[in-house]
Length: 167
Image 1 (tube, one colour):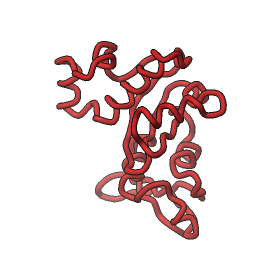
Image 2 (cartoon, rainbow, N blue to C red):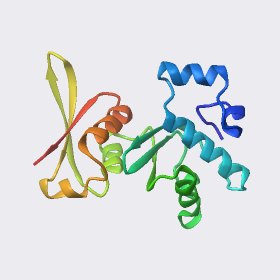
Image 3 (spheres, one colour):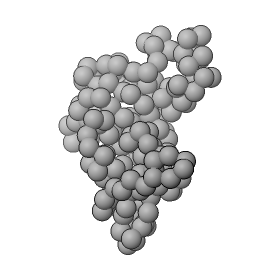
């Protein structure tokens, strides 16, 4: 199992100087620390998380996104037991595991589920390139979180500034 913080920091409630510096600099977030500690605790309890590689955790108000470089099925576990235990440990209402390395349309679809993504357009302006993620107007109420936090999650996953639009 690979996590963004060191094993010592995951096992204790204190951060070493290296991990604390990463947190202060902004390369790590508090959500990364919380998710890493929860995954470490689950692994110690006997969950089979050997192949899981956590890249980043983002808290989007009602939902926590865990971005992985490994298949998300390892984290979900049989019948979703592992992810439910993780939700309890993280004290989050819902946790969603997303695998990086997929196409932009597929990634956006997983992040915005149950809202359906109609398409992704590139918009060029003086400020740079922006991706417009198009969804149906009727799906606006189905979005898992607010637009601002979902835009930040999409920006991390797709690597570019993103805006959600409704048609």
